[in-house]
Image 1: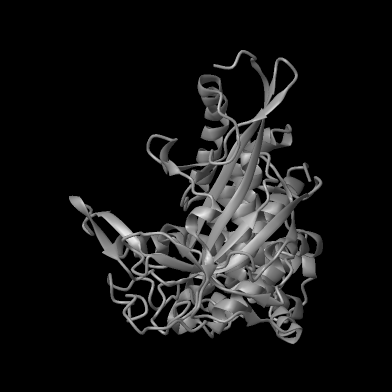
Image 2: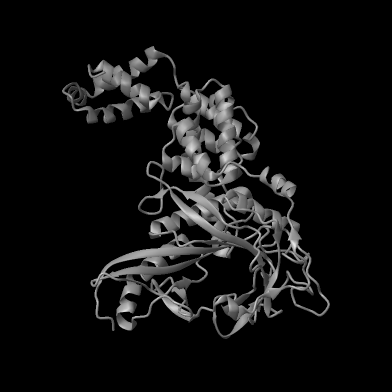
Length: 531
């Protein structure tokens, strides 16, 4: 047991992130890939062929789409793209890898070093755009084939005393992104994971459904301990394997931050050759557990794959791929905040899913053609998408999940209402022709198949949802309500403005939905001498 005591603890985390690429076929064969939307729910052991089964004579052929997707991610992360990349055999035996080796990349990865500018992380892993950002160094991103799955319970969830092998995932293109240990808090790590997932989905390179293993995070965690005698020691690195939720990522890091100093006090072990440990994460117990000692690179006996030639990547090819880069979700978030005046939380929510972003941009553009200022158009359309739309998305996804737990969730852009109709709703609301309740009803009507090309204003008039613009009628309703509620009216005159809510409710009843609450409040307070 060490004699010195611990004075302070500094967390260090590097990340390995596995991204299952959404190619139609696997990395080295024409067999369908479960990373592609059409095949991700295929029955076990149906996405196989002689190469997947490692039958004699089956030879690998590179998947061009997987290579270009990898280049795309590398460019988005600021990585250098290799001029020549090659393939190596990583040797180990798993029951779900029939060849007993994995085709990977060792010393010549497709994406080399880079730097990604990560916004400051606020508590909870939310970005703070007002604070200085943190440069995260990317070590490499290499392309390989995935292994299959070992299932330790039956498909029905029943316990079994053996394992079941599913080879569907075997050979799926997998991009492994490796960072330097530049993270110093769990919040930073969670933010990077979220940003990377959104970025990859925005680029269209992965479905990104973490519950299905499309992205898996493996933090490499250790601590720098400052001791009472003035020296520092580094605890052994712990790699926590196959985390598929942000909650698990945070939990594993926070547990290791708390437990590694305790382990050092017990055994005195420090970082060094052969000291790296692989641990798993127990979501129920909220703790990591030992799986195995981590192999070093030489243990895998890497050697060049004799069946695959090195690949030369011409700069013209890189330039062609670069043209496919879209506006990054982080830049899109900043644009929404700057140009449309949206709060960070709203801007992030809109930028998270690329189809929703495109939907919102189209709605804003249409609202502007109807006379709205860009910031006003941005705020109103965002409000409809994030409130009226998201409410319906949540309802439908709840129903969908109850019917099919594996179904992909729908987005606002899938509801049926068009972007131009959302723009029309914004224009009607801006002109004061509909109130918030009418807007919500109209949003729902526009989601119905028979109304998806209808004029929103025509629907509003047909449903009697247009606000009464006759100032005389509105004044009459207000005076009627004041006369019927003299005591409440006197309270408002005396400065008790919260009492105005009761009068407003009565006016809205008389208006039968044809008055705007904001206009009613303004005229009511003015009538009572408080305007």
